[in-house]
Image (cartoon, rainbow, N blue to C red; front, side, top):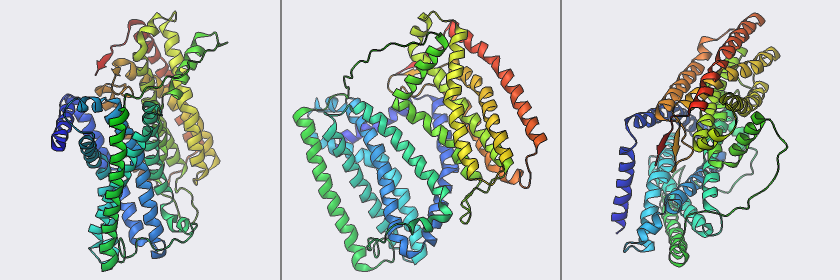
Length: 514
């Protein structure tokens, strides 16, 4: 019966891929290629170099930090997908209507989640780490030990995720918990990713700040010896089996005794009165509340704010001695302009497309399209400009650029956002998508491809800037010329708001899915 459930899940995944459409498949393939071509080689190189050169006194602490970091990401991501797959989708009710036991259902779902999520994180990490340690110690038995350790660790963390979900499913509003954890999982991955590049050169100094640990991994994951190298994996496997059996007991009792319904919670309706009377300010306030209350939307958009900072670290690694960014004024200005362009385009397109969900109500409002477009324009500026200015001000503080760079950079961010926001609004209002299963996906395939290609182009330009701008300095004349060009672009882009206002008056061409 477990095999039949797994076969059903496999067919469901293939059917989902088939109904995506050719254009959406191309978009996913492009995103996958971008991840394979840029972040993966950088992470691989960084981890391999740290593992191969780290002082052996800190090896246990290093391996423990890697285990905990991967476990935190895996638990956050797994809980989100377990809630989505087993509770919100109603699959438990569907499967339990057939002659299937709760234990069989747990085993099948446990295998599926381990293969899709745990293995995708732990297996590459185990192979990379095992290869680096094997090269360092010239002991190739460390590779299978590393694979066994991280795969078993993934099983343990997945079991913990199942246990937490089914212990709290009938107490907490699981839908909101899923959205919060999706946001935390994405942000934890990005945070660890950025920290790795920020402290790569001073990693040993940071490890020295921690207290010394007793030997944990010696003989098993490094400096291999026969007895601990054989007994260590066996003990871990036995412990993992015990944890999985305990988790199965919790899940089976939760399904058999009370069942698990869809995670809805009845919140208290708040009443209040607003003293704001101007329609534009009311609409901006409404958009701000919608954004802050929707955790799933924050999970989609907040990585876009971190992306410019990642671009900065890609183009300028940190120096160990000075702990500052090797970034001149020209590079910092270019990174700020590129990051502001990407962020403003995507966020303004996403927020504008969000109006498609309640467009009938928007059209009933006694407000003209020009005011609707102006309100959305102001809201997008509020959602992008201040955050980007704070991010790049902090970046400038740790860079080698002068004060004149900061004075040009902050107005430049404002002008880039003024020019990019109307373009993003036009993209978002062209053909928005309303999806019941995934409300965070608001842009159609064509819009997604356009923004993805712009992001790829900007990313490649930022990566090549250290070679192009080497030795160049930012002068007042060059800065004023750049500000004038950006100002002209912002003025021209203002007229695009007229096209967006017409779309609000005539109606969006909305695509409904699911």
